[in-house]
Image (cartoon, rainbow, N blue to C red):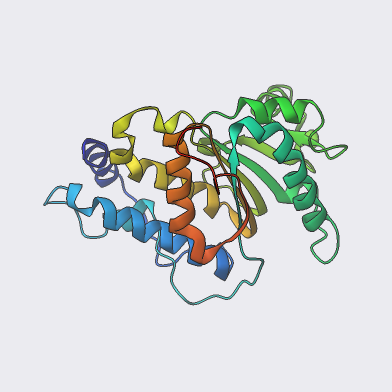
Length: 252
């Protein structure tokens, strides 16, 4: 409730242009975003102050309204035990890159973003170890260095990699979203802050216009429960391609 009150207070004080529709995403991704949005609003509507403007949610979680038809692939979902992360992600990325960079998609490296939510140090290590093979990529550090020197050409045809909070106003034809729940569910009251989690997931997925691969990472029983919760929430709008949580006992 306090988070919503802060967000409402900040948002209400800005001169914002309310979007009548979100025309960025394919119909399949838009359907998933609508479901995430509705889940967030339904779950936490009671926490909003009584004097909240009626359209406040539309200002930072735009509605998905019919009126366009961008056709693409159904988003893919992977539930990954963090202990298997270093062995799973290379296979997932290899398959995704094969799909995206060869016909009929034939995308360029600059058409793809790898978006990280919360801690994912293992992914950074894998990138440095050659996760993408000979496909060029940029990080926040390399982009900052290019910006400081004026050498922008290095970013022109590279995969964008970085934190979700650096993606505002950006979009790509394809995105791989890595959502690490390991730290998120460290505390029992994290379920009470699910609106923050869903808002971050909404932001990351909405960066993808046509193709989206979502990797949800967990480690212990609590974060596994969170991963299963997100899987069950999204399963009508995604293809679950890997689920490490299936068959696991309550004790990890």
